[in-house]
Image (cartoon, rainbow, N blue to C red; front, side, top):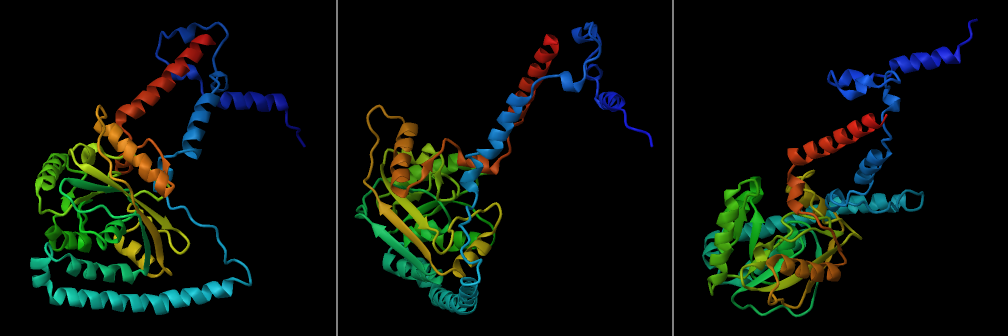
Amino acid sequence: MRKNNPKSQSTELELDQPNIEDYLPDGHPIHQEPRGKLRLCDLLDISPTLSEAAGAIVDDSFLRCFKSIPSEPWNWNVYLFPLWCFGVVVRYFVLFPARVLLLSFGWMIFLSAFIPVHLLLKRDNNLRKNIEVFFVASWTGVVKYHGPRPSMRPKQVFVANHTSMIDFIVLEQMTAFAVIMQKHPGWVGLLQNTILESVGCIWFNRTEAKDREIVARKLREHVQGADNNPLLIFPEGTCVNNHYSVMFKKGAFELGCTVCPVAIKYNKIFVDAFWNSRKQSFTKHLLQLMTSWAVVCDVWYLEPQNQKPGETSIEFAERVREIISQRAGLKMVPWDGYLKYSRPSPKLKEGKQRDFADLVLRRLEEK
């Protein structure tokens, strides 16, 4: 039997290595190196680049803001698993049908009186609240409200952290608001157009650049109306997983109004109320809530804030964000939530590629 020659194996491995010279233009100074051909293994120490890439993957605080964080499993043993199975049966075959019936009953009452409701919705807040109670009851909402609610005055803007579309329902059942919200397709969009617009809600489409100017104009017009419902704005602009808070958009803080911060914190003891709109539709999210034991959350009405002399709208927004984050126990991160809906800029990628190419050339010239 022929024995393997380690030296010949090493030679074969080196021959398999690509020549760096093959990737360089003719006349490059590297070609005149007297020490012979350079191999890829002699190119450079890539540990700094690898460290940067690994750090970006492991400690990406931006992506962590929009991921559901699963709770620790508790039912995978012989004692608790039967109880968990019993709970599944109760949630899906007892609670869920009862909640569907309750929600259907509420919709029947609403639709049978749609015209008078539509005419009176702006004036009769009690009627509106009774309708929204059916939504909260359909997922057994256990909501605790803390602090005195600010009195309804003109030129007020309410701002809150954003976890799901149910944030609006949780706050709306206690106080009349006109919300600023992303336009949605399907049956949610139908509700926006036919029902929620009657309370003065304003919709936008983040993919349309012109919508920003239109929404800014509508905001200024709305706060000037004495009879309009106060604005409710989620300045983050997207749903965050209730563990972090991303940058607040400055639009709500440059209207010259009193800003009333509202902090919302959901308890994951029964269900995670975070809506990951990139992975699930609102229908699926609502089904998840309706098949849980309950949706538990706390709402804090915090002290109204006014812009200080010399304070910019961005600084004002960050100060209010810090107040809300501290009360709700959220970690502040310096990211724009709209990056969730966009890909990295080509200029950013080209800049990284250019930096890496410069590093390669410098190392080649040092050889």
